[in-house]
Structures are given as structure tokens and as C-alpha cells.
Length: 70
Image (tube, rainbow, N blue to C red; front, top):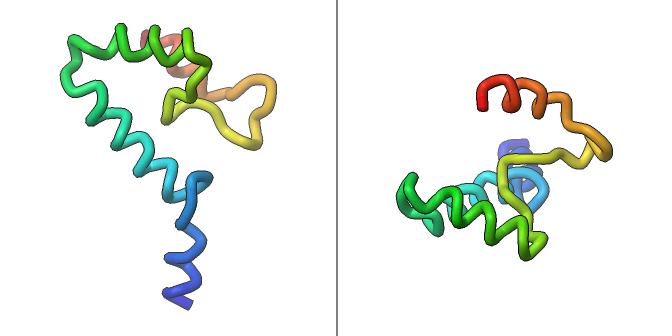
């Protein structure tokens, strides 16, 4: 059962998403680079890891919290 649990976190949609977010953070490098990275990602229609969810197709309710804090 432990192997099965670990296996469910494999791949880009679950546990792999965390790894992709970590790669994005490494690519950004420093906080000063964040705005340019995000602008480039949006211009290239690339995913910004840590945002969006497969269940929330039209609006992610967590975005409301992020907008309040931004």
C-alpha cells in the first residue's frame, strides 16, 4: 500500500506539479527576476506553476484570496 500511495504522486498532475514548481523557482532565481519571468511565461502562453487546478475550469476560488493579498 505504501508503494501504491507513492505511485499516485508520480507524474505531472499530482506530485510532479510540486517538482515543476520547484524548477520554476530555480529558473526565476531571485525575487528581482519574478516579474520578467511571469511576463515571458504569459507572453508564451506557458503554465505558471502553482496556479490553476484541473477541477476549476473557469475560475479557481483560491484566486480570490491571492487577489486580496496582491
